[in-house]
Amino acid sequence: FVSGGNGDPSQVLAITGETPGINGSVDTVTVAFHPGTLDQIWDRVYSTPDVCDDGYYTNDMPADIQVDSSKNYIAVTGTTIGGCGPEPADIFTVVYDADDGTPVFEQVYSSAGETDDTAIGVRIIDTSVVVGGTISTPTGTQPVAVAYGLATGNLLWTSAAYAEAGRNVSAKAMERHP
View 1 (spheres, rainbow, N blue to C red):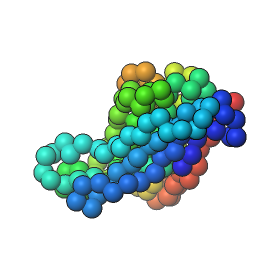
View 2 (view 1 turned 180 degrees about the horizontal axis):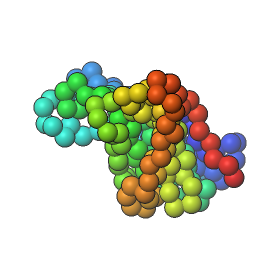
View 3 (view 1 turned 135 degrees about the horizontal axis):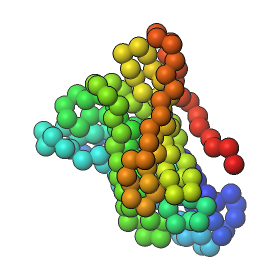
View 4 (view 1 turned 90 degrees about the vertical axis):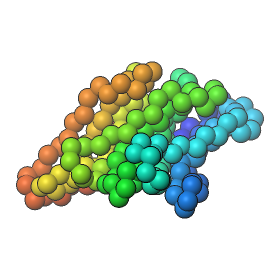
């Protein structure tokens, strides 16, 4: 996934993808390029922490990336599977300082219950990072949006579009109205 650039050398170019992790797991790698020369300035590997310390390693697969309009931040979102044994999927979001790749924040969103949550997109809107995806509920799948503070990573709000019982609605793309 690529963000920025658009053929304009004054823009930040950032790319995210997958890289092999520990014991056959998958991690997310993000690379930023210099706006003028397109030389690589940094790369970072994201792996959801093994919070249970049980030896299960996560598969962290990116879904989307965006550079903010001021070129100060790079946001990446994706789906993480595993971690505490055979856990369901959750949505991870990491925001980097565009200049040096320092993580500004890392968050993992997990809806209620032992259900699968998958990411499809990320947008930086003013001072918020909004992540879109799909959550599983006892009655089906539903689109969800999750917002974090850009500089803090604090959860601002979540909003799920609940459809009628038994109807599955999966998010496939997201965009914001200018």
